[in-house]
Image (cartoon, rainbow, N blue to C red; front, side, top):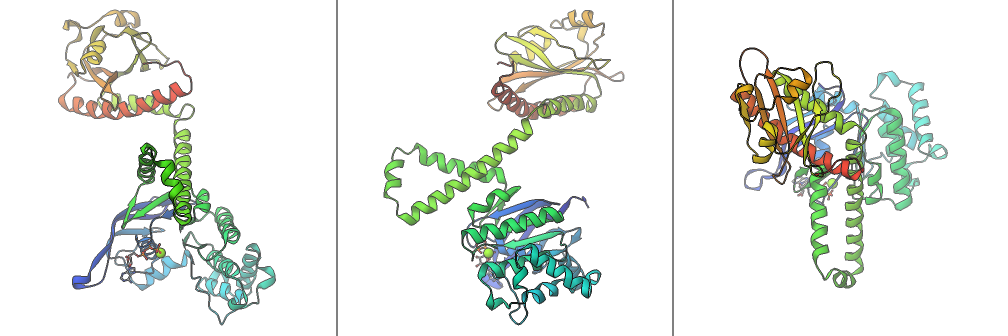
Length: 443
Ligand SMILES: Nc1ncnc2c1ncn2[C@@H]1O[C@H](COP(=O)(O)OP(=O)(O)OP(=O)(O)O)[C@@H](O)[C@H]1O
Ligand SMILES: [Mg+2]
């Protein structure tokens, strides 16, 4: 098992009902939750969130697919395995499921009873410390019906966390609470979880707490859509409204309820959008993308067994092709600049056609100047165009001298075409961020 993944769901399907009433509720659910990660799941009522959560918690038998919780496969799991898995999970549900005949302290203690390492006095001390950390020090001997909703929810959190679970599954833990109490409860969970290093998967409709999430996932009609898909869909829906000239009029005519719902939706969309931007910022910041481009380019050279690989980009301002990545013998930086119509690379960029040349010196387009300058002897060449997502050639990748006696093969060409397609997307995003950062790149 990958050590850092506490939840691994692969192609999970789930059905309710029998015979003609049998209905599929979850469709092909695949997701991962890493150690220490806080994942929030949103989605409309009835979309299958609770069903998925109870499957992950070992509270419902897995029917189809694979679900590994803390390294344990739930498919075909018997009682013993389920019990072992549950020991490492803390549950916080909306109906907090406290036992009303027990005090707050006893409710929390009950949850450690499963763990022999916290037996006796030690367990009681731990339960008290946990209740104290959720702000319930003075109410430990109260029974649940002597507590407010928020206080009961805090006891439920203390109970979920007291035995150091690796995973917390929370189903709308703030639903019954007012704004302030809801925020408090989530803050407590967040802080304790970060302190204990456990993962949280939390279902919530509460937009105000989305910002504690490392990641937000969306359930729609039993299908999990990826975070970026959800953001794109929601932004598109929003843009659709924006294109409508009647936006102002339509909003002014909304009922208060509908307006508040729209406000909520919009807040959620923008929070997710901000998260996406943050993600992109992290990803494209500094030298990260540069390094990635270089590493990928060198790797394709390695896979094709080329002695050298060069990645050329078109500079729109000067009309030249310049080497963004150029592999050399000693590893020193080499910058090559050639006119955009010249030579093999120029031809490939101009025509968008791939060239596989077994003998460079006999090819009419081959230019010996670079060899003369660098002292390198080119034998054979594979050169492929790189296109952006709009299909326009923005550069080329050139592989020189396949190792051994053969020139580049059809397989090398196919690998190269795949690489060039991916590189097109990455380079386009690099060009955009570079332009954004005011780097000296033009097209
Ligand atoms: N035990 C059951 N038997 C039959 N159908 C069920 C059962 N439990 C849930 N369902 C159905 O499965 C679907 C998903 O229910 P689930 O409780 O997972 O939704 P949810 O996303 O948690 O909704 P909510 O946000 O309202 O809590 C619903 O259509 C529900 O009616
Ligand atoms: Mg539910």
